[in-house]
Length: 151
Ligand code: ADP
Image (cartoon, rainbow, N blue to C red; front, side):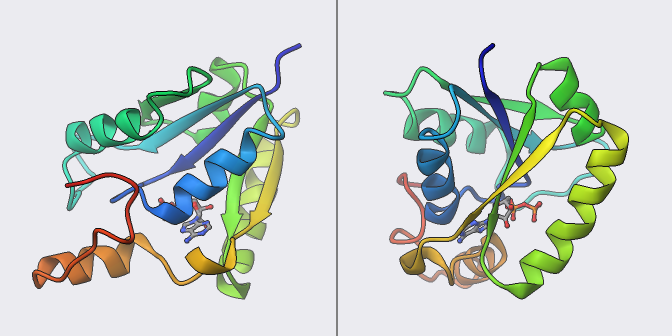
């Protein structure tokens, strides 16, 4: 049975920290689906959804076992529909841990077959967050060293 993992998030934008988690996840899983949570009516994004999908696809163009999908339902349901038994998440610090701990418990209740798997961030990427990148970009700062593609 193929080991399929979902890597869910907003990815607004997708960062080098995210890329690192996905590439390391390939050592554990046969297939990784990068799942962008997005509801066209409700979600306000800084980087448009279609733009980000293209950039992520381009980043992993040489990895046929990595795909990108958009979803607007419970992550646990989306995982089930895609036969993903694992949720891949990254942990940077205790704040991430507190948040991820609660989400993992809820997801387990919603879908008992789903296992959340956490990778500790690689130190060079530990300070990178999508919100900081948005802030720097908004004021015309250079973000090229924080993302794995060119804008
Ligand atoms: P969310 O909308 O759930 O906050 P994000 O798009 O910010 O999603 O991140 C998705 C996942 O990537 C989360 O598990 C988050 O902890 C992880 N992550 C974000 N930035 C980094 C980083 N620099 N290093 C490792 N993991 C990260």
